[in-house]
Amino acid sequence: MIRLTKPSIEEDDLDAVRRVLLTGQLVQGAEVAQFERQIAGYVGSKHAVAVSNCTAALHLSLLALDVRPGDIVVVTSYSWIATANVIELVGAQPVFTDISESTFNMDPQSLCAVLRRLMSTESTGRRVKAILPVHTFGLMADMPEILKIAGEYAIPVIEDAACALGADIGGRQAGTWGEIGCFSFHPRKAITTGEGGVAVTNDDALAWKLRALRNHGLDPIAPTPDFVMPGFNYRITEFQAAMGITQLAKMDRILAARLGRAALYDRILAGSELRAPIAPAGYRHVFQSYVCLLPDRAAPLRPNLISALRANGIESTIGTLHMPLTTYFRKRYDHRPGDYPVTDSVATRSLTLPLHEHLDEASQQQVVAQVGDFLTPAGTRANRLDG
Image (cartoon, rainbow, N blue to C red; front, side, top):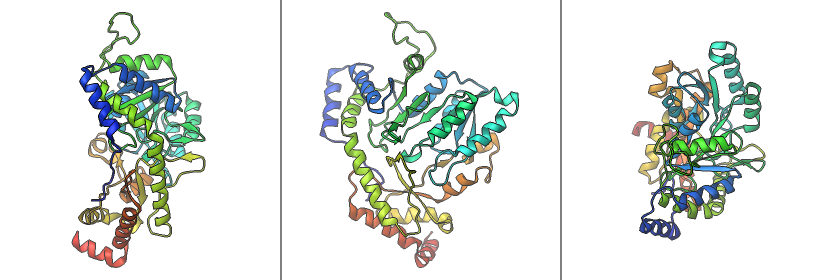
């Protein structure tokens, strides 16, 4: 089987986990503190607060910015469902923007239109408390333009950088543009701790609040234990942090390998019907996933294609979710096809190809050949019958 992804877990990772397990010190100790320092150093932020997963990081970020029931958070329409779920979980309302077809990220023009509409009346304008762009598949959203728009209305920005550790625009790393940036260490990411996440910020007060919220409301700097707010148990473990430290040490090697394999896909796909992912000039795409677009005519056959690839020993999947059209958000807010036309198109045509450090050229050639065979007229007819 040509795997969709495969974590780069090696003996040093296993040794680190075993070492920590044998100490019996398993939560909120020296490993977590060191991991946080190293993440902050890597991205160039003042603070890093490690938590149990990126969903927790996003949840705490909204709370740290005092997003409350009845508030509005403007968010991209195309992401994993956690991005919108956390807004609902604090009692706020997600208001979606459409995306750019070239980048799969929040479209600044759509953001402008949404904010103009919301701010046109006092009843909705006063409720807008945050903007939540996503750096989809490892390519940063247009943060210079998003921050410019956000600044016009004095709205804070939280970056969902779950897929984008190591991505940058002109050398400035993902997660360091908004008030808070959130990363994931899920197994599909470049480096992993199994599960795990981190929120980064340059704001001392926000960092204090994030640390208190993740640990039952315990004041992180009080000389004696003092619980100053209701909080959660969103702590990452010591052995996860130890693994994060060893994983981060090979981050540059892993990213270089992924970028090389993505470049090879680009070359193989040149001239084909598949549209390879696009990175604007000055943007470093770290390819958490290699997501291409099928031609319009093949969109209805995508489930058959994914099944056919699996039958031939190749894992693939969709890109990510059209969040407004998932059952909960569609029913709650009456979203319909056509409300977000670019997302409508991308969500039905996106296809994720296998990508990881251990993928070899022969496997990549095989993947593209199998997709190409399916997309030929004869192959399309045959697979329509098979499906």
